[in-house]
Amino acid sequence: MKENVIGYRIKLLREKVKLSQAKLATALGDVKQPVLARYELGSIMPSYPVLIKIADYFNVSTDYLLGRTDKSEGKLYGQPKIEKSDRMEEFIEMCFDPSTDAHAKLKETLKKMLEEQQGERK
Picture 1: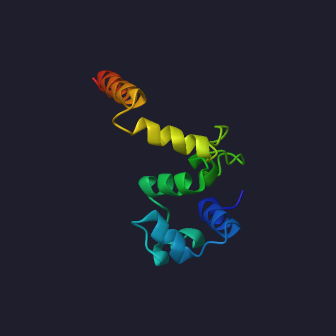
Picture 2: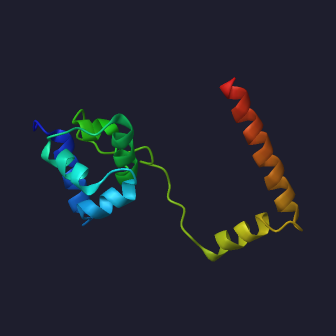
């Protein structure tokens, strides 16, 4: 494995989607292009939060970026993709129309989910 595996893989992923360093830096938000260039060169290493942002952006695991595995599967790997359709659009409109039964049920379900999530954090 290369000594600068993190930089190598960031560059590989970036070039694979034909993205410039400047555009990736902008997409990541708090990373400037010269800093990204230094990551790729291996002169500095990304912080933990930045490493996670990069992994999330490319949907790869941090283990892949760190060179611990050659499998790049990220947290969304294997999850079915939701295809946009007219029926899905109709469903969304129906759920957010306050005059429908679906709206009230959705609202109640979301409240229960939030309560359960808050209970788990305690």
